[in-house]
Each structure stands twice: as C-alpha cells, then as structure tokens.
Length: 336
Image (cartoon, rainbow, N blue to C red; front, side):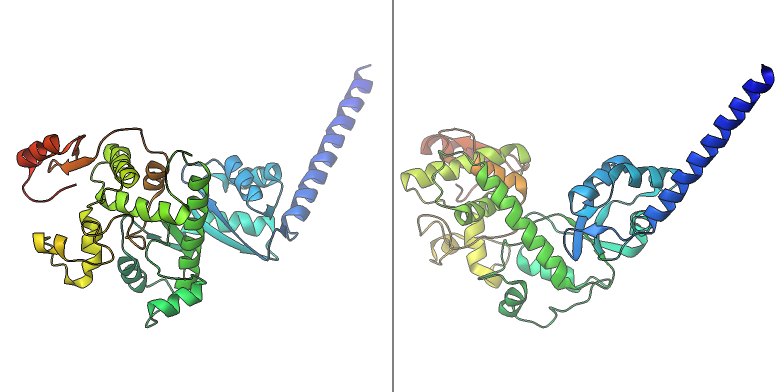
C-alpha cells in the first residue's frame, strides 16, 4: 500500500517536472521569437509608477504583438519587473520579447529627455533643442519655413507642439522629436475639440487653439483658468475686444523690452486685441491640455473683466465700475 502510494507520488513529481520543463522550454522559445508589430516602427510610452502588469498591457495596446501575461511573467521570474524604466520607447521589426524586456529595464541608460513647458514660444523650444547634446541637430541653421516643410506642417510653427516631457533615444533626430510633439498636439486638440461644450461660439479647432494660447499666457493661477476663458468667450459673444496684453506683446516681437506701455496698446498690429476685435491670427505659444479644456468647456459666468492681484491670482468683474475699482486697488495701468 505504502509502496503503491510512493510510486504514485513519484509519478506526479516526474509529471510536474516534465510540465515545468516544457513550460520553461516554451517560454525560452517564445522569448527568442520576433514579435509582430502593427507598423515597422512602433512608439509607445511607459508612465511613472506603473506595475509590470500594467506596462505589459499598455505595450500590447500600443501595437506590440506580445502576450501581456507572458511578458509580465517573464519579467518577474527573471528579476526585471522592478527595473522597468518610465519613458518613451521605439521598437522595430525583429525585436523579441526578451529584447523588449531588456530595453524596458535599461531605458534610462539609452534615453535622454526634454521637458517642453506650457506657454513656451517656438523660439524657446528651438533654443532648447539646439542646446541638447544627445540630439542630432538636423534643423540647425534651417529657417522656420524649412523646418515646417520637414515636419509636414502647413503654416507657422507657433503653438503646434504639445507641452510634455519627451524621452528620446540618444543620437536621434530633433526632427523626430518635433514630429512626435506635433502629432501629440493634434491628437490632444482633436480629443478636446470632440468633447467641447456645444454652446461655445468657436468655429473650429484652430480657433480653439488660438484662444487657448491666449488663456495659457494670461493664466497666473490654475484655479483662475476657467474664469479667464469665460471672460474671453463673453467678450467674443458680444463683439467686445479681447484686450489681452500677451497678444500685444507677441505682436511686438523682439521690440518688446519687458515693459508694456500705453503707446504699445495703441500701436496697431495683427495681434493687438486692443485695436482689433476677434481672435489674433495665430496661436501665441504652446498650449497644455488644461488651457484647451478650459477654453472648450468654460464655466458659465457673466464676467467681462479681470485684473491681476499681484500674487498670481486674478479679480473678476461683471462691469466696468467694479473693474476700475479693482484696478485702482491692485494695480495701475490697462487691464482686461
């Protein structure tokens, strides 16, 4: 009886060993086989704080043909699961699951990053790109028109790039980074435009981007962004000039010396929203999602004016008398 039981246990152990060896063999084979990709080159993102399981599912969703369960299991049993690096990645045809795991765990050594900030002008972004030692500078010395052609952008470059932190392979082209930022801007703009309040009076997504850039430059405190957007919507609705200082400053270009004078507010340019009604002809700067969202889904208010308190916050008024009192209290000179 005991001998029979021991034989059964031995057979179960042997079977278990065979199954384990078969699974290990299958995993080794799988790890060495090229994965299928949705395109010859697939870009994907890994966000900070994500678990290996979440990363595996995100990689699969973004066009890399791997089994999230198997990829996550392989990373865990080989000790790579806790070494995954956040960042932006690109994989190409021929990569295997094992190479993918190694890439994800060594990303910080192979990639550099550039932070693009809300409110930056194109010239500020270009200076930051030119100063990056880890980029290949294919746009260096090119005119803005030439850079736009390289990127397939029809028109000016201002406001066409989404503010974010971009990870890139060392030695990659600045054109590739700009193209990713431009594509991201179009994606976010399309998403926010699709979710817009149907009551807003903007004709198209381009107008939304222009107005959002004004909101971006006017916002000193995040909590005020929605009310600032509502002021400009209310003014556009009744045909009142926007009277935005950042638009005047943008129209002055390099002539602006840091001090906005009354004569500057009276000097007509296409961007002077004191002398001209409606929106300026193009965006003023790079726009974040929060400014787009405030512009496309503003709160319903009857504010027509605002003035800066001096601490980043603004005071909002419904009529000129209240606004003038706020200006007298918090600052001298012109204000919306």
